[in-house]
Image 1 (cartoon, rainbow, N blue to C red):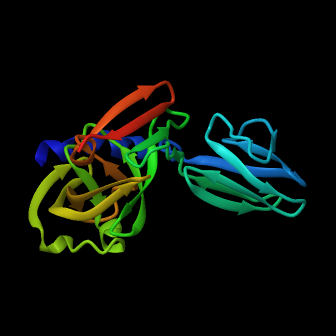
Image 2: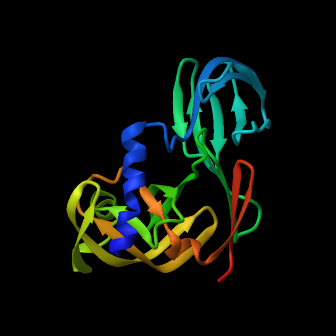
Length: 219
């Protein structure tokens, strides 16, 4: 556990150096017509999408009128009007109930929306973490009774903090659901995003192909 949390130092520094380090796909609507939407994605030049079109960033235009458009990113849908924007986690479920494909952000990091005990949380894929790691804020939000877990004091980049080892009843990423997943909960709010560590990833076959990372459940 001590070595696991030392690995969090790079993650804390990552977020201190820049808030976009683990950014989601940023969609901004510039113009709308029936069946088409003009959008700027991740601050890029405006481009025109037609209904059904999917961009390289994984953004799909589901529907569009002159008043609003419906976008889908990784199974999550957002309805936006002209001048509105939204940041949506850049994860996309691949075909098959035991596979999920994640898209890298502009800095090469993979983020996704995971569901812990039925509650959605944002995760950063971290192969350097030996287990899934949550902040106590996220744990409480997901109904994890972390105070009943084993408590240790651990040195991190932010000083000595209490850490609790727990098991998550369920953790779902895309269409992949695992039960009884080992996790660590860090007291406080110094961890701005949950870490998808090896207690989940060890049960996956991981295939990296450019800007995509495909997770295939092994058991």
